[in-house]
Length: 141
Image (cartoon, rainbow, N blue to C red; front, side):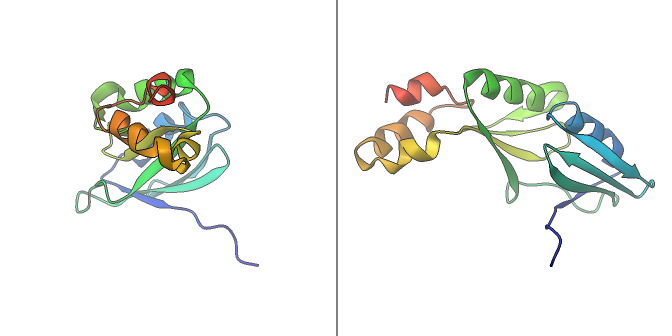
């Protein structure tokens, strides 16, 4: 049986710093090993590899990680942590961390709200104006 897939994240020379940053944010997270070139770490049960590959490649919005949040407190927590120290806010729940990696911090119930055809347009119109998601505003849409 094939082992689970996992992403490799290319950093200039900050793989260890990134792994420490992410492990400090996500529960049940740990650095598995670090040989200087590669840092293997686990975030909430998901394995990642950080590669110190040099300055040739950079992150962009073509790849992002989605964090489904159970409530506004969780949205606020991840949003604040990921945008701290040089991260950047974007629109519709998207942000970048200080390493340039893109994240989508979204309410877990967004799919349910969008599955109701009568409500989906109103919910979409509401969140298109938001940077960080406001669950109460979406529920009231």
